[in-house]
Image 1: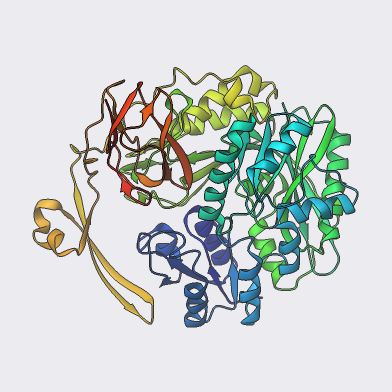
Image 2 (image 1 turned 120 degrees about the vertical axis):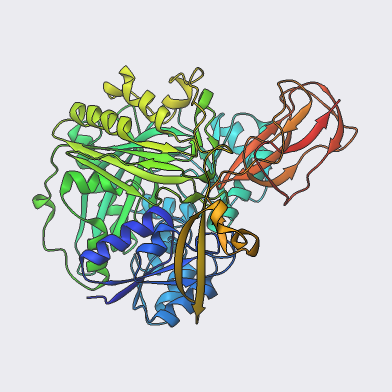
Length: 584
């Protein structure tokens, strides 16, 4: 059995892995960026090592820094979590080259399935058909246009080395192709460290059904059950459940068998997920995620299996001691992702900032996997997932009602969250009846009148100051903390030895509608400026693009006019309410 595991990740998934390791008696090592110096995963781990930097590229995507942390800590295994390097072949090989166990599939499987293009080819070779598409890397938007003309619009541009909806753009017409490809490439590079993309047909009303697989190094490959992940916005999942509602068992069995075929075709072992689109009684291979999925807890609750534990056991060389017929699926589980986003009007605007209050739900059949606690900060530089709320009941309706109760108990202040949107989904008759698709949230669910009330914790909130005395020896972190009233901290704030939990002013005033003064609605980084002084613009025209929490957000002109002033350039950091463009 492994002795010490380094978790090459952050947030909720790092916390999740640490907890199972602790139950198994395995030591844990956290790594952290400068912004995550006092993050929850760092506080929970047995050891923690600094990676340096703030952005993902400077820290969690810095292979050399992670390899040094492995060496310094003496870890004999690495768990990659999800996102970041979890599906990066080069990283997996760099780990195994050091004689350290990679808790995941072999690099060769990642190479085949981590690349969505080669995975399509492998699936087809195994007799599993995929969504019609081009199994080649896009080199220009002209290829997108040609594909659209052949198969019809809309089409989907997807990150070849990504997942979770990151780096995916839907193109409705030829004139959108160039901008959509550029945007998809930027998002993919930012989140996965690679910018290759491909194109495929965009189905009109599909359900997103995925199969959890588990395979060992002794030739055993099993499917554990399906998850319905159709409740999405921006192609990112909001709610997942197992089993899928109104899903024929013959399709379930055929899809499970197809998932096993795809896994065996690439020599897969460890935990993985084979994703399908299901429409009109047919299913199509979408991709394989060669890692643990965000939504894995719903499978755990209906099967009674700890998937992280089995990842570790398989990586340690153990054989799965049960067969396909011995897997029992009981009851129904639903998961809600709680993201730091403001869903008002259906816009889902990123909402970074400090969590000033976090009251967590409890009671029968309720589980919360969170990466933050009260007082922690949600950074613009990382994914906006605060945590996942998961419930189990013996029926789907029981699980739905239990989730609504648990969401009512959950109180998060300081940032806006997607909880109100999740409640709207769960309360809708379509969801209760199991009638929905990947487009249902955006095309049917009406969130236009949803307004999230301002959260307490602004400038009027009573501030506290966290005094931290930190020492790093060979990159390992030791600290002592004191929490003091700001008035009592004195010169501590000025010295840089303290961090205030008071929410700071945005540094700019929010303009009124159609004023011509264009402000950004959130903290982030400018990744594209599309206008210059003297340009004529129309209301609704994109003037710049802002990246926040790994998502690109369009900033538009609010009236017709001429650009009088451009106050930002590509790469600039901006805050909520900052003025970026002035139109006269």
